[in-house]
Amino acid sequence: MHERIDIEGISVSPDHFIDGKRVGSPTTFETRCPFDWPRKLADVARGDAATADLAAQAASAAFPGWAALTAAQRGVYLHRLADLIEANVEQLALIECLDMGMLLESLRLRVILRGAANFRNYADLASAHEERVWSSRGTANRVIRSPAGPALIITPWNAPFMLSTWKCAPALAAGNTVILKPADWSPLSASLLADLIEQAGFPPGVFNIVQGLGTELGNALTGDPRIKRISFTGSVPTARVIGKAAAENIVPFTAELGGKSPLLVFADADLDAAARKAAGQYDDSGQVCMAGTRIIVEESVSEAFLERFHAYTDAHVMGDSRDPATTMSALIHPVHAARVLGFIDRARTAGDTIVRGGKRWKDDGNWIEPTLIAPRDNASEVVQNEVFGPVLTFQTFKDEAEGIALANSTAYGLSGIVYTGSAERAERVGRAVRGGTVWVNTFLIRDLTAPFGGIGISGIGREGGDYALDFHSDLKTLQILEGSVRSSQ
Ligand code: NAD
Image (cartoon, rainbow, N blue to C red; front, side, top):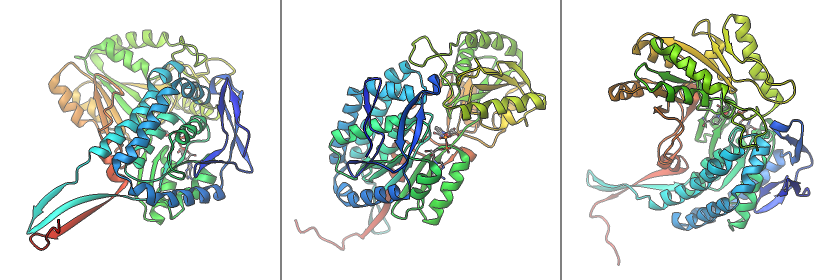
């Protein structure tokens, strides 16, 4: 075990949380602050195959007891955890801000509270579940949901707390025990979550959190036959690797992956609102899977749109994420910043037009200027591949059919944003745009009971609401011949 670390007055354990206890590892990895690079925040326990084995053992041993509780009984723990998250918003927000770089104000006011809502929502949803019952061909039928077993949850670095809670809550509510592996670039909020799990009094082994690299710890976990569900959010290449491990053990697997979503603006739209939302896609430096990164505007209003878009983009402020004046966070890591700059350089070399930005904001630090690129054609790499940085593309269309065709012209299909003032067009284009979620005249508002996921290479399966509870359950059809049994009571 390692000593707890003091980070700006907040005590953070660098260790794993397995079977209700802190557990160390012989080696560590570093986590640093994106907007104060290279300030080191912590040396975090670097899990390995032995860590994976310990976690799988704990989650398996705790499973029968947790599964035997009713959904309402499990809900008591989930609500208690939600209460604790609400009571610790300030600490969670500051640690997430320092570790991932997301803006502090947004974390304090919105993002962390959404984590609490995730646990509440699933506690209530699982408790309210009624089995489907019907009669067919002389038999009484019912669909029974049974907990599936230990679930492995693997999350990315870009919204660590929100995504981890979003994915762990349905697994726990459904009666599965959980092993959460957060990403190694932003692991610290998960460690604070482990403290709250302990305070909430979860039985040991029900909710485990392990830290480490994907290629070491992640690999060992996905290959463990004691894991009965894998729920992954991250990149397409990693999903391919994890999918193979899931296939080896015949384990159900959901994958929420990258996006290259269109932001489609029609001439009949509120142009000012559309331009403001388009400039808002730079907020987290574009490190948002659902971001509308391909701006596609009807030709007749493209100049008027661009004028407004530039004005809103000019108002962005880069800087310390703790400063309320900052509107654009730094990129998570120099390696990621270099990757983003690589996309811009290749676009420039290939003949795409850099309309604005295209370089670092200053020589030191992980900021890249908000960048807009007009591609030479739709096949351009920067149009077809996810950049995951402050890089948007700009294209125009002459009519609705062309706009929809451009919107649907990548291998991704995570989401879409449409701006129009016409109800008929909203319905028509909303249905036609390929994506697991399509917003009209808004963005990112989500009802937690709605299905969420991607089409094409943006993912497999759906999470959210009952969809996630079904994924985390074994569904059984029980059929009893009608009239063949009598109640003894
Ligand atoms: P990543 O795929 O590199 O890593 C994601 C997680 O997988 C990390 O915890 C990592 O340690 C782990 N991992 C890596 N290799 C592994 C292996 N071989 N076995 C097991 N685990 C392994 O992704 P990232 O760079 O952390 O995140 C960015 C990506 O996530 C982007 O593509 C983004 O669009 C996507 N994302 C999608 C959503 C969504 O809901 N669809 C949400 C957020 C981010």
